[in-house]
Image (cartoon, rainbow, N blue to C red; front, side, top):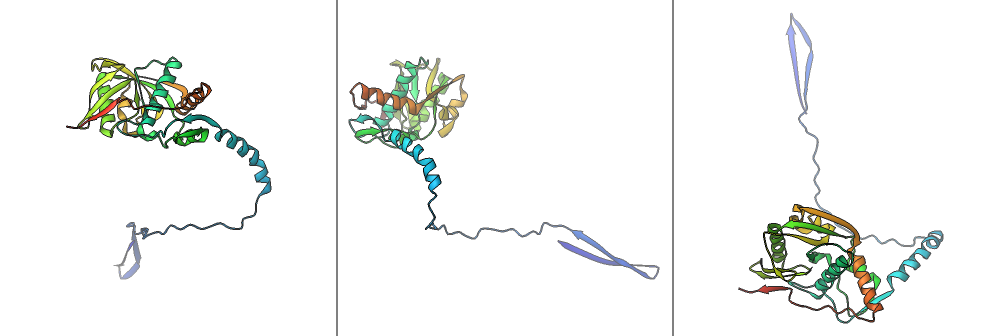
Length: 254
């Protein structure tokens, strides 16, 4: 803030000083010089017995459900690129569940990083599937023009491969080639419908091509629920979970 003082003499008399105030934005600006994160242990807090009594029955019920064995994994099921056992399992479950629920689509696709944890060989407890898929993602179908479908496959290729079912392709120099959909060579002049999840359909994980949808249809089916139901069905049929690698995505080295 700048102050200007002046005195003016008129007819031999001094007039009172004139004060001019100019605001120049001199408020001090503070900057963080640094910080040091530190954990502060909390000790000797009294136990709230009423609170424990309130939530204990709920916790016991949830623990009982989450620790229930719902199936058996024959092998370690992990994600991988360009293809992985977990990739194929989840994409194939999506494809099968979509058909069982009479959803019309050509192939299924989900994002690699939506698969958060592997499934270890042995008994599968319900909580492991929640760790694998912690998000509330729903089935969505997206119809795209052929040129946009090509962009979608190139998007998958650029990332090194994503979980798909009902389609195959090769990755050459970071681009998709030899695309087959339902066993038929890809035709750029046609439109195709993809079964995916709502996160990708909204353009998540940089999949902006999905926002070019000609048509989009949502559903009330959660991807995680489809996987849970599949594992339970296999257990009821006396079968273990044993996905295979089938070269649905191949990397061609030039």
